[in-house]
Amino acid sequence: MDTKMNDIVLVPTDFSEVCANAINQAVEAAKFLNFKVYLLHVINSDTRAYLKKNDAEVAALDEKLKKIAGDIKAEHKEVEVEYLSKEGSIFSTIAEVAKDIGANLIFLGTHGKVGMQHLTGSYALKVVTSSPVPVIVVQKRSFEKGYRNIVLPITSDAGPWQKTKWAVFIAKQFGAKIHIYRIHDASEGVVQAADQIAAYFEKNGVEYTKEVAERSGNFAKQTIDYATASNSDMIMIMTNPDTNFTSFILGTYDEQIIFNTSQIPVMCINPRKFNYEILGF
Image 1 (cartoon, rainbow, N blue to C red):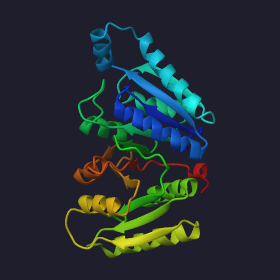
Image 2: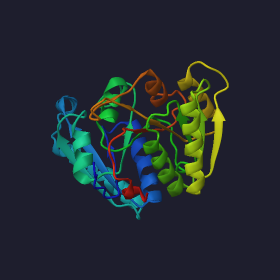
Image 3: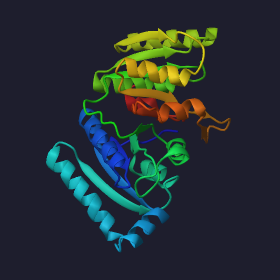
Image 4: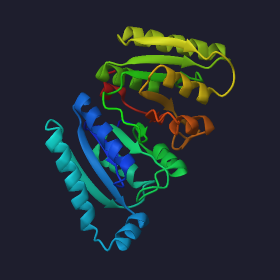
């Protein structure tokens, strides 16, 4: 898929606290990347129930978006901001808008059952797996200095290059160090994949470390513990494609990492066919 990208960070919002945090992180990222921020509210049944309860009209949503955009511009004059409200479903409309506007990244705030739209659990996972571009999932914890330490867990030798190339792109933009973290009981193929990734980082001038989990067991928990101990501010994972390369599966491992209790942002990459010249490769 030769995806056209327009240097845009898309941020869906239901106007909750965690979505405000996602917007803040997206704005900080946009400043580093020199990208535009695009705010989106998907008008669905949750929205209409909220409007009815508060005796408000749909136009009130655009006013909310306009105010958020105005506040961003007032505080961050170098960041261009646009906004849109659109009828649809969060499970499909976010992905459709990302494709239509040529977004490079999506920042998704996920939370408990607080807020207009319950972007939590399976709801958030459906948004992640439907996305045509990487999704950075954030919780309530704020990260305002960009992404300086990124953990890249390696569990398989199957197609790690897409997240590796994104890791290089993010590392170069934010001046980040990548921490390659390999599963303990690794096959020869996984060991070779980790070595090849390290060589690729070396070739591209990316600072990195290589670590191996100390024991067998719950690798998701080990990854989170390692990321927490190393003061990392992002974990990068890749979803598993089905055989037709059209839909993606998130397993227990992915879910544990995405909803980690340390609230470290997680960049989720769906392995789509992609023109990496867009990233400078």
